[in-house]
Each structure stands twice: as C-alpha cells, then as structure tokens.
Image (cartoon, rainbow, N blue to C red; front, side):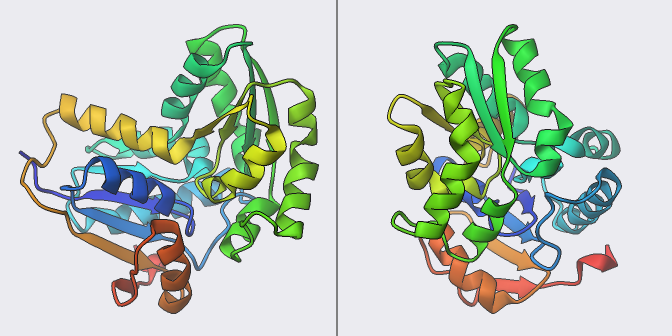
Length: 271
C-alpha cells in the first residue's frame, strides 16, 4: 500500500477532466492538482518555454512527495514527456500513449482524426505512436487553437452558436477525411464533447485523452504495487497560479462538485 498522493498538472482547467476520471476510478487516492492559469494557454508556446514551464510544474508537485505525476496536458505530453521522465525518479505519465492505444483498437477503417493545440499537432507524437501500434493507420490532424479559450470562458454548451461555428470550421476537413475515430487531443475538449459529437455524427467514436490516461495510470500503479488500498474517499487539493475565484467557479463545472474554499494560489515562478 502506498498512501502518497498522485500529482496532476495542466496549463489551466482542462486537466480537471483527467482529475475527474482519476477520482472516479480510484476514489481512495489522494490527488494534488496544479493548474497554471496565470500562463494559460500552453498550446502556442515554443518547446523551450514548454519544457521550462513543465519543469516548474513538476518541481511544485514534488513538494508533496507524490508517488506519480500525471501530465494532464496534451501539449506538454507531446513535447516534454521524455525530458520529464528522464529527469525524475518517479513515474511520469502523459496522455499520448493511452489515447493512441485506445484509438488503434477502436478504429475500424484505420482512419483516425486528431484535434489538439498547435504544439501538440506540430510534435507529430500521436502519429508516431499510432504508426507503432497499428502500422498503416491514416491520421488527419487539425490544430484547434480557439477551443481552449472557448472552454475556459464557459462557451462549450450545445446551442452556443459561437462554439458550434468554431467546431464546425475546424472539424470540416477531419470529417471530410472519413475518419471513424477522433482523438480529443487536449484535456479541455471533453467539455465540448456534445458539440463535437453532434457535428461528427454517431458513426465516429470520440477518444477522451484524460479518461484513457486515468485508466492507464490505474493499471500501471497496480502493476507497480503503488495503489492506496485504504477504504474511504481520498483528499483533493487544488492549486493555481492566478485567481482562485475564477478557477473555483469553472472547476466546479468541470468536476461536477463545489470546490470553492479548496483552492490556493501559488507563485509557480519560485520553483
């Protein structure tokens, strides 16, 4: 039994979709979440800056003596996972491999769509993973830089004409490619799942990278003997680099529970 917490970080709110899944499938585990809301979004940053930010995020989470850290950010997972794994002596999990494995298994026609931030798409990480897992898979990738901002401003509900228009414009070439599987390659995107699903149609399976990552983390912790087997609900702690009030209101939507009074602001540049 290992009672140390699991650390989770993202550039803002999106990683909370992974926290929600981790809490659902491993309710007894303690979770510490850091959202770098003062520097969001990460998607348009250079690799050097992303690595710098990711190192600071990990350094902060390591002050809690975690047994593992989850990069609940598609951008960092595709650009800095190898660096973070090489520099740390605890398991560091990203979202790419779990989502690629799920997509390789789900697709019937070997045509997979991928949407993500500019940095994620530029990295080619999903294409490389899918090619290894299922050679010959055709990937149609599309950077969707506005989707993070839409989600972080609460514009993700069906009927929102702006969100629906932006999604349709971004996904038109992906839909035209005839994909039967679509990777939501950013942990913000599950909040847009209904809009995306309605546009792509019922014949397209949506792969939630946060959900797949949570399942992967559970399996790996079990294999390594790192699960916390004590009964009862684990503790959840939330930290941000900007306003706690803004985070609390939107985080409650992401998580489906009230987190007001449970969020603390920290200076991430000190790490």
